[in-house]
Image 1 (tube, rainbow, N blue to C red):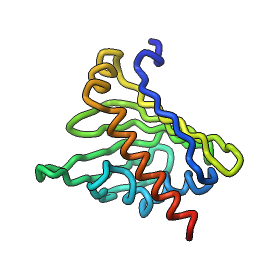
Image 2 (cartoon, rainbow, N blue to C red; image 1 turned 180 degrees about the vertical axis):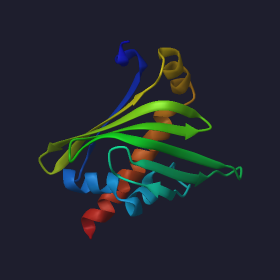
Image 3 (cartoon, one colour; image 1 turned 135 degrees about the vertical axis):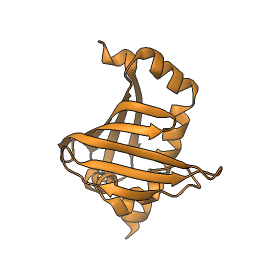
Image 4 (cartoon, rainbow, N blue to C red; image 1 turned 90 degrees about the vertical axis):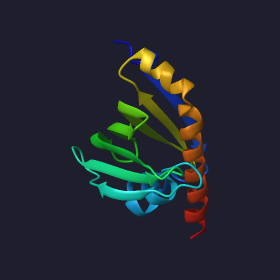
Length: 151
Protein backbone atom coordinates (compact mmCIF):
# COMPACT_ATOMS: atom_id res chain seq x y z
CA UNK A 1 0.00 0.00 0.00
CA UNK A 2 1.33 3.42 -0.99
CA UNK A 3 2.48 5.21 2.17
CA UNK A 4 2.46 8.64 0.48
CA UNK A 5 -1.35 8.68 0.32
CA UNK A 6 -1.51 7.87 4.05
CA UNK A 7 1.12 10.37 5.21
CA UNK A 8 0.94 13.90 6.53
CA UNK A 9 4.34 15.62 6.29
CA UNK A 10 5.53 18.71 8.13
CA UNK A 11 8.92 20.22 7.29
CA UNK A 12 10.77 22.80 9.34
CA UNK A 13 14.26 24.20 9.54
CA UNK A 14 15.28 24.83 13.13
CA UNK A 15 17.88 27.52 13.78
CA UNK A 16 19.85 25.18 16.04
CA UNK A 17 22.55 22.55 15.54
CA UNK A 18 21.38 18.99 14.95
CA UNK A 19 22.83 17.80 18.29
CA UNK A 20 20.63 20.28 20.18
CA UNK A 21 17.49 19.38 18.21
CA UNK A 22 18.20 15.69 18.85
CA UNK A 23 18.64 16.38 22.57
CA UNK A 24 15.32 18.25 22.71
CA UNK A 25 13.61 15.26 21.05
CA UNK A 26 15.17 12.59 23.23
CA UNK A 27 15.50 13.97 26.78
CA UNK A 28 12.36 13.79 28.95
CA UNK A 29 13.10 17.08 30.74
CA UNK A 30 13.04 18.84 27.34
CA UNK A 31 10.06 16.90 25.94
CA UNK A 32 7.98 18.05 28.92
CA UNK A 33 8.52 21.67 27.82
CA UNK A 34 7.38 21.42 24.20
CA UNK A 35 5.40 18.26 23.43
CA UNK A 36 1.93 19.85 23.66
CA UNK A 37 0.01 22.80 22.27
CA UNK A 38 0.65 26.22 23.81
CA UNK A 39 -0.80 26.65 27.29
CA UNK A 40 -0.83 22.92 28.10
CA UNK A 41 1.77 21.16 30.23
CA UNK A 42 3.18 17.76 29.38
CA UNK A 43 3.87 15.19 32.07
CA UNK A 44 6.31 12.47 31.01
CA UNK A 45 4.99 9.26 32.56
CA UNK A 46 7.27 6.82 30.76
CA UNK A 47 10.29 7.37 28.51
CA UNK A 48 12.45 4.42 27.51
CA UNK A 49 14.43 5.81 24.57
CA UNK A 50 15.52 2.53 23.02
CA UNK A 51 14.27 0.30 20.21
CA UNK A 52 11.22 -1.47 21.62
CA UNK A 53 11.10 1.08 24.43
CA UNK A 54 7.77 2.58 25.41
CA UNK A 55 6.89 6.24 25.93
CA UNK A 56 3.81 7.82 27.47
CA UNK A 57 2.96 11.48 28.04
CA UNK A 58 -0.10 13.02 29.66
CA UNK A 59 -1.50 16.48 28.97
CA UNK A 60 -4.35 17.93 31.04
CA UNK A 61 -6.88 19.59 28.74
CA UNK A 62 -8.90 22.72 29.62
CA UNK A 63 -12.04 20.54 29.93
CA UNK A 64 -10.40 18.57 32.77
CA UNK A 65 -9.76 15.41 30.76
CA UNK A 66 -6.28 14.02 30.16
CA UNK A 67 -4.97 13.71 26.63
CA UNK A 68 -2.65 10.68 26.48
CA UNK A 69 0.13 10.25 23.93
CA UNK A 70 1.90 6.91 23.97
CA UNK A 71 3.90 4.68 21.72
CA UNK A 72 6.85 2.42 21.10
CA UNK A 73 10.16 3.20 19.44
CA UNK A 74 10.74 0.93 16.43
CA UNK A 75 13.82 2.54 14.88
CA UNK A 76 16.44 4.95 16.24
CA UNK A 77 19.46 6.14 14.27
CA UNK A 78 21.32 8.79 16.26
CA UNK A 79 21.13 12.28 14.70
CA UNK A 80 19.24 10.83 11.70
CA UNK A 81 15.81 9.46 12.59
CA UNK A 82 13.39 8.34 15.27
CA UNK A 83 10.48 6.15 14.19
CA UNK A 84 7.74 5.27 16.60
CA UNK A 85 4.33 3.69 16.69
CA UNK A 86 2.00 6.17 18.35
CA UNK A 87 -1.44 6.89 19.75
CA UNK A 88 -2.80 10.31 20.67
CA UNK A 89 -5.95 9.40 22.58
CA UNK A 90 -8.75 10.16 22.12
CA UNK A 91 -8.12 11.75 18.71
CA UNK A 92 -5.59 9.66 16.79
CA UNK A 93 -4.65 6.01 17.16
CA UNK A 94 -2.47 3.51 15.35
CA UNK A 95 -0.15 5.86 13.48
CA UNK A 96 3.58 5.75 12.83
CA UNK A 97 5.50 8.95 13.44
CA UNK A 98 8.82 9.53 11.72
CA UNK A 99 11.14 12.29 12.92
CA UNK A 100 13.93 12.84 10.40
CA UNK A 101 16.92 15.08 11.13
CA UNK A 102 19.36 16.50 8.60
CA UNK A 103 22.34 18.72 9.40
CA UNK A 104 22.27 22.03 7.52
CA UNK A 105 25.35 23.92 8.71
CA UNK A 106 24.43 25.32 12.13
CA UNK A 107 20.76 24.66 11.45
CA UNK A 108 18.71 21.47 11.30
CA UNK A 109 16.32 20.46 8.55
CA UNK A 110 13.52 18.49 10.15
CA UNK A 111 10.87 16.34 8.50
CA UNK A 112 7.97 14.92 10.48
CA UNK A 113 5.83 12.23 8.85
CA UNK A 114 2.62 10.92 10.36
CA UNK A 115 1.72 7.67 8.57
CA UNK A 116 -1.94 6.69 9.03
CA UNK A 117 -3.37 3.18 8.62
CA UNK A 118 -5.54 4.31 5.67
CA UNK A 119 -5.85 7.27 3.29
CA UNK A 120 -9.39 7.91 4.62
CA UNK A 121 -8.05 8.18 8.17
CA UNK A 122 -5.37 10.67 7.01
CA UNK A 123 -8.02 12.84 5.34
CA UNK A 124 -10.16 12.75 8.50
CA UNK A 125 -7.15 13.74 10.64
CA UNK A 126 -6.32 16.64 8.32
CA UNK A 127 -9.91 17.90 8.61
CA UNK A 128 -9.60 17.69 12.41
CA UNK A 129 -6.60 20.07 12.30
CA UNK A 130 -3.58 17.77 12.65
CA UNK A 131 -1.34 20.30 10.85
CA UNK A 132 -2.30 23.17 13.17
CA UNK A 133 -1.85 20.98 16.25
CA UNK A 134 1.65 19.82 15.33
CA UNK A 135 2.52 23.27 13.98
CA UNK A 136 1.84 24.72 17.44
CA UNK A 137 3.94 21.98 19.08
CA UNK A 138 6.90 22.65 16.76
CA UNK A 139 6.66 26.40 17.48
CA UNK A 140 7.14 25.52 21.16
CA UNK A 141 10.10 23.32 20.22
CA UNK A 142 11.63 26.25 18.30
CA UNK A 143 11.24 28.45 21.40
CA UNK A 144 12.88 25.80 23.61
CA UNK A 145 15.79 25.46 21.17
CA UNK A 146 16.39 29.23 21.35
CA UNK A 147 16.44 29.02 25.18
CA UNK A 148 18.82 26.03 25.13
CA UNK A 149 21.20 27.78 22.73
CA UNK A 150 21.43 30.74 25.12
CA UNK A 151 22.55 28.51 28.01
